[in-house]
Image (cartoon, rainbow, N blue to C red; front, side, top):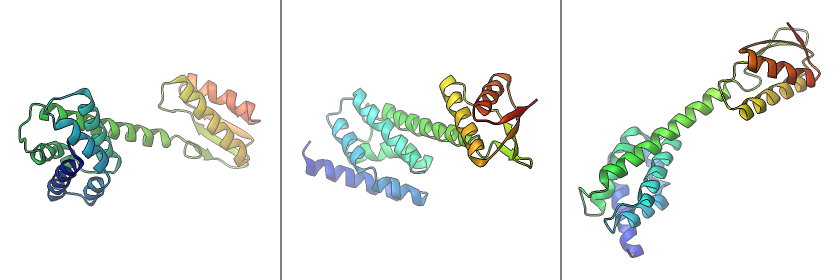
Length: 192
């Protein structure tokens, strides 16, 4: 496909997406995804579905979610791409739509997990109870040992930098034990 034809298809696709935009963020997404849209047009234009096409569609779905675009945009964008290519019902359309939605959902899930984990970062997991004493909620939701170890270290470092000298720790025994060890290394006495 020549560049001028690709650009014409992307412009038509963008216009159709803009017409169905339900959030201001949708317009932002449309404006900032031209490169991946151009790739999708190039990969879809021969009419043969490839893994590369579906990978590009998943990336588009991730970008829609990361830029806070609407589920409506994610659900309709492949229909608009197919129409821009002059193929309202190509054989690859359902799978491409699924790839966009899978990318969209995966990015949302990752964002929610990040936000949930961020809620446990120092100082949000600590309550000052006076006289340089803190209470630590050691209930980090992660299950990966390295992730938990890094979190425990960040909390202990933050508590030490804040000037804590004594702590009470509550949480599941395995994470609690790690937190106690890290606080002790940081010079913070842990009370039972």
